[in-house]
Each structure stands twice: as C-alpha cells, then as structure tokens.
Image (cartoon, rainbow, N blue to C red):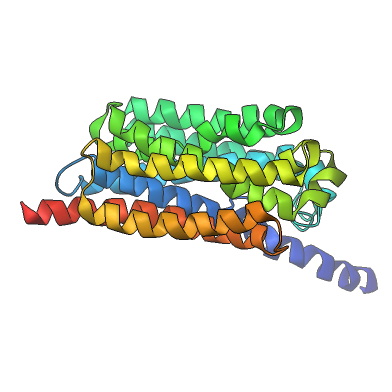
Length: 305
C-alpha cells in the first residue's frame, strides 16, 4: 500500500500537464498575429464580405498548420532552447514533454490543417500552406537558422505568407496585391527580430546560433535595423501607390511609420539599452496597426460606394 500511495502523485500530474504543454508547443500568440494578417488578406480579396465558410475553414486550416509548424520548431530546436534563458522553460527544452509525443502532435496538427484546406477550401491554398510549413519548420529552423546570419531575411518568406494564404483561400488565385502584402511582412521581419536578437545576443552566442548581432556585432545590426526600417516604410506606402488603398490608410500608416522609425532611430543611436526590446514589442503593434488600417480603409471605401 505504501508503494502505491507514493507513486500516485507522480502519475497524476503527467495526465494534468499534457494539454497545457501541447498547447505550449503551438506558439499561440505568434499564430494569432499570423491569423489576423491572413484574415485581412481574405477581406481585401473581395469588395464585400468574403464567404463565411471560406473564412472560418480557411483560418482553421491555416491556424492548425501554423501550430504544427511551431511544434516542429520546438522539436528541432529543443537542444538550443535548453541553453537559452528566453526559451529554457519551453516544454521540450525543460523535458516536461516527451519528444515522441511532441513530434506526433506536430504531425497531427500539420496534416489536419493541410487536409482541411484541401477538403473544404482549395488546393492552391493547401499547397501554399504546406510550402510555408516546410519553409519554416525545415528550411528555416533546421538549416538556415544554424547556417547563416541572414537566416531571418531568407526564412522571412515563409513567415510573410499569411496574407497570401488568406487571399488565395477566397479567390483561388495569386495576384500582385497579396504579394505586396507579403512584401510588407517580409521587409518588417528583420528589424522586428533583429531588435530582439540584440536584446538576447548573449543567449544566441551561448547557443551557437549565428544571429547577426553575434556574427557582425551590435553596431552593424543597429544599422541594418535602421535601413530595413526604411524599406518597411516604403513597402507600406505601395498599397496607396498602386491604388489598393486610399487616404484613410495613408494617414494612419504615416502616423504608424513615424512612431516605428522613432523606435528604430533609438535602436540605431545605441544610447538606450532598453530601446531594442522596446522596438521589438512596438513592432508587433505596428504590424497589426498597418493591417488594421488596410482593413478599415477597405471597408470605408466599400461603404462610400
């Protein structure tokens, strides 16, 4: 009896932490931002409201596949995560979850997401989602992240895909407009992530990951953030230049860009140690603001008609 009572407390928690740890593999906050961008792509793809079925099932499929890609990232990076302060408490890095279960979970989510898109949305959306999954989970995480300081730039293509996926889920075709939305995220990704990389430079150095601040130094990285910041500003103005958006979007995005570049300027100057992490957190709000402005302008124009 004594042995039974002593083993019960260790058996029960394993049943309790399961779902919490599995959800922890999904990077839900990151996926939520991706789904917002995908939803905006859906809305901009049609003058009126997009079909509700395509919206719900499209976002569900894209979301499941994105969660699967995030889980694969946890599996592949578990040894690196274990030596970094920022990631050491992740489920696999801290060994709170068996690798086999995490791998099975990643496969289940990915297959379910792509299959749902094939079955209920369209084959092109499914193919592009699958390509993005492979691009992030394998090409970026397993290869680029360890191979080159330009990992964020090259791998940014996969992370920039959500608005294209949303657009194609409604229209079934690729046109220049969603590629422009992709360009905005692609240009935004380096200043966004390199700001975090400066803040966590010692973590990346300890893990042996060739992030730009580790390989080329912090002053060079600050300059790249400043330059890529201006590239992002230019990309956000292109929707107005091609007639995709109007005056309302222009006013909002100019205000957002001004604040965005103030943060990037503070990082570039290098006089405020808190500037990189502040710029990182603002950049998330900035991207959501840009896509929110696109959405607001789109429906304001529709109502004006």
